[in-house]
Image (cartoon, rainbow, N blue to C red):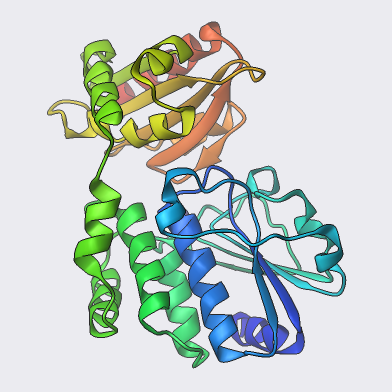
Length: 314
Ligand SMILES: [Mn+2]
């Protein structure tokens, strides 16, 4: 069994470095933190490090370790919640001795010496709970908090299709382990006043096609006016989903100089949109994906493709 092979590999290495994707969401940080903390508690003599760039506003959930290139010598590297190698945060991820991928995105980029990918899982954190439990590794309150944050983040508080009976069974376990549900739910749902104002401009800018396709473009000028960072702008991506009649949508956020172009966020209530994202240097889940547009013209192409897909779905 692959899971047993992963366990044996973990037991073999004294140094283990855990990576996740760039611009981390609660699931990336939650699954990374869950396995890192569990390994530290299960194997106190091993060195366990969390690698990756800025965690932004999610620093209440997790913080990274200082990881240097030398740390990778003879190490095991585990990458969680990351579909493809360009998305991995931390450039030295391939400098270890052995690489393991644990994920729930479509397995298009089969990197690593061992892979454990369950595409139907609600979140990587859900997979992590099952793995840690089957291995008999420590899952205490702290680990439970990290897993719960990841599940709530990726399921939109148990709202999305990927939420299963098993997801709730795990949530129930996490409650028994004294995970702090009210605090985590509160932290994950709160926005700054500036972000709330940005949500309101998303409603202002939003264009909705008869098909139910919708889109909005947020420029750096908009963000500066409201005092919102580019990372914070990602918090408004789910906003149009609450609107009746909106089926699938795209939010284009202009990148911050020196980068140019737009970060594209695709979301959908039914039509599959990750195939669209793949055409524009992106990918992700069937109903939630990310991509990149070089300029406004490419954003327009992306919108036309979205309308087409939503029309065909109906
Ligand atoms: Mn995830």
